[in-house]
Image 1: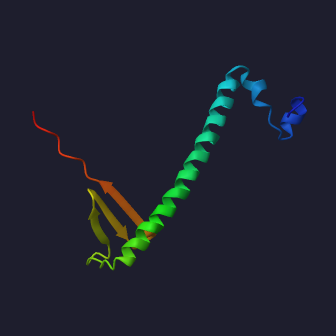
Image 2 (image 1 turned 180 degrees about the vertical axis):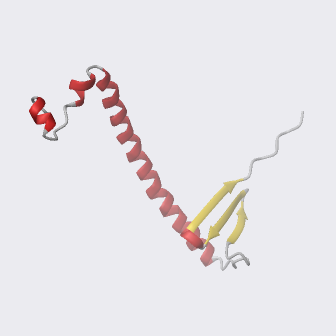
Length: 102
């Protein structure tokens, strides 16, 4: 933390609260919320990778053949699953039920 002008000129930054005063509190809250949601996102990503592996293993076990595009595509209970060998990509799309005309 810069204690005087000479320290600030030497490359140290002033504490944000000194510069923004009360406005820095909002930034602090946003920073804490960001870290909270980042932890949730990283945990979800870990689960996503786990289930992508399970989908690939089960597709291999079922002996599904690749299409001319190189992809494996199939449907299960209203979900379309596409496994692309390029970039190790798995896409799961849920088909929406048709709306009832009234």
